[in-house]
Structure formats: structure tokens, C-alpha cells
Length: 460
Image 1 (cartoon, helix red, strand yellow):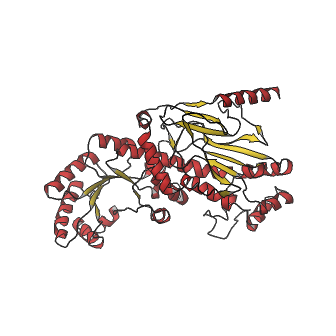
Image 2 (cartoon, rainbow, N blue to C red):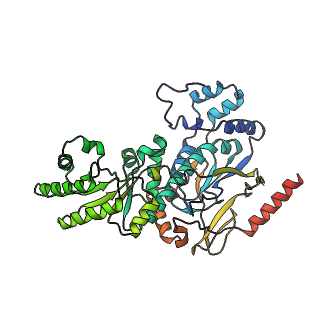
Image 3 (cartoon, rainbow, N blue to C red):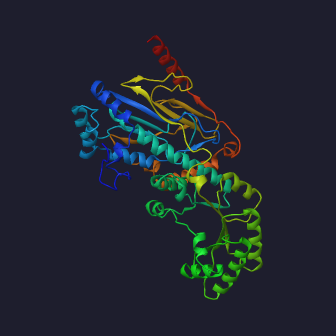
């Protein structure tokens, strides 16, 4: 199967190639299920076992892409030929793969909602081979965007509502697809804009950009760089003033801003990307205010994270915006989530894993949240718990999205939901520098189910 696809096409994932973005054991297990339990139904839970030490909550994200994958899931003739070349699978299984479509049901936590360890973000019920095949892609789609949306939410908390941050992460992200979906997740989590033009166009996110040091370096006189740029972008010019000397760059900005005012051009702002950001921002702000240029905003960037931003906000550093790149796009302090996809029920029989430190919960489940944020309860899917609302919604039946459930994956709704969640979240959980555990309990019925399945497995 070496070199499947045309030259130059192999580096990009599209609807035709996505089914092959699968760990090999998903295919081998599905082949065995096809041979021996083809008619069985299965339910799998997708969840994060426990939160990273640096996280008190997660923001669910990635559902829209997960559902698109399930709706368009089909192996092309070329993909089947490539799998045939592995000489691992019999003709009957490959023939089934060629006509297979996802026909299952999906329940999910809406995008933008807060979730905690062990709580299912996604519950998939489908014929066993189908449910197995989609594991790898679903984990990738959900856990990556959840990780980035959570980091963005922490940045939004740090900004404190009076300031905003912009996604500058494109060039630092781990690949082109990560850059695109990372910008989407950052928008859900609270970013005000993105430097990523494709993401801006694809998702309707405001694009934002200033200039690079290379632009200023292309001129012998810093002021000439500022003049030329401002005349090209009359209503949105932001000068990068730290290429040679930040304070001198600010003086040149004042000079140019005064000159251009006579031409009807208002300079929008300046960006500082290095040095002592807090001290320089204060000095530059004083300079602009004394020159009667209070309208010029200050953008700070340069390997910022939520901790650095929170400190500057606490210290009342006069910054209007923060540009965040590497720390956001890679979620640098917590760059991975321990997401798993585990069998919970097979043909009506509850299943669970008993491995040490990796026990899973049996049966089809629901997550219930009390409006006072006193606790969450994981229960069985058909339970009702007084005073609590269920988080998992049915978003797909028979392999198609459920009409009327659009708010669960709508980008606008996800962003608004995250903003409400952050507003309502208990103050302790908003802490950026200490671990706070939120209570997640099991319902009495689920506890009984767990003990019954354990007893059955031990007898076996």
C-alpha cells in the first residue's frame, strides 16, 4: 500500500481518505467482529479518564467535525484496493467495507459545555463493526479541539472580560489541519479573532493581523515603514514597534500618527512583541496619551500564556489586546488529553474494563448537572435526577444528524455556550494556578450495575 493516492495528494485529509485515517487494529478488530458478531449492537463511550494537573475543567469541542465524518464515512474503491494490498483481510470483509455506511446513533455533550473527568463527551451506539471502525477519528477530532478550546477558555478567564486575546498560533501549530481546527476551537473558547485567514473564511471568525519585523527591516527608516503601511491600510494600521528599540519605535509612531492625521488617516494601534512588556506598555501608553493619541491601542505578544496575561491584568498593565501563539495552539502546559473510547454495552449486555487504574463504567450512561454547580452525577441513560439537567443530547440517528439538534454543534451557539459556562463556573474552578477537583458522583443505579457486572466477570 506504499504511496496510495496521487503524488502530492497523500499529505491531505479529505472525505475520501478520512476512513483510512484509522489505527490498523480498528480494522483487524472490525474484521473479527464482522466474521463472528456482525449482527450485534454496541455502545462505546468517548471520555477523558482524568483531567491534567493544569486543568480544573474541559470545554467540549469538535462535535461538528465528528458528525461530518460519520455522515460521509465510506471506503472508496481505491481505498478498498489499497487495503486489499495489505493481504490481511478476506474478500467478504472488504466487500462489506465497500458498501458500509455509518448507521448508528450518537449522543453528545454540546460544544462549549464544561465537562470533567470520566464523563462521556460522546456515546456511540451502532452495529459492532461500525462502532469499532470510527474510534480513532472520533478521538482525534474531539480530544484535540477540546484541548485547544479549554486552553482558550483559560485565556479568556485571564483577560477578565475587559481585554481580549487573538489566536496567533498558525505557524506554531502541529500541522495544517491542527491550525485550522485549532483556530475554530480557540474561537469557541473565547478568542476575539484569528490571524489564520483560512479559518477566518471557513468559520466566519474575524481576521486579525499587524506586520512582521521583516517588514520594518525592509526600510532604512522605521518611520517610513509605518507611513507606507498606514497609507495602504488607512483604517486598521497597527505598527510593530520593537524591531530595534521599543521606546524609539513608539516615538516614531507618534510622529507618523500626527503626520497622517492631516491626511485623514487614524493609526489603530501598536504591537510590542519583546522586552519588558509591562514596563514598555506603560511607557508607550503615557507617550500616546501625552501626545493626544489616546485612541491608539496597545497589543502585547511574545510567548504569552494565561498566567502572564492574568498577572498583567491584575497589575493593570495598559494593554488592550494580547496575541497568543505557541502556548494556545499547542496547549503547551497540557498538550494532550487522555481520551479513550471504551465498550460499555454489547448486544444488551453491560461491559466494563477492570484493569488497575483503568476501570470503566458499564452500560449506556447520561451525565447530570445541578444548576448550582454543586456536583455532576453519572447515571444510566434512562434515569432522571431531580434538580439536575442531562448533558448528553441525541445528535444523530440512523447515521444522520437529528433535525432540531443543530445548537449542539453550531459554532455560534458553541461560543455563546462557552461564554455562559465561564460566567457561571464556580470561582474555584476558574483558578489558573491551583488544582480544584469538581465532584463527579455515580448514581445509585449505576453503582449497582457496576457491582453486578464486576460479580459476573469475576464468576466468569
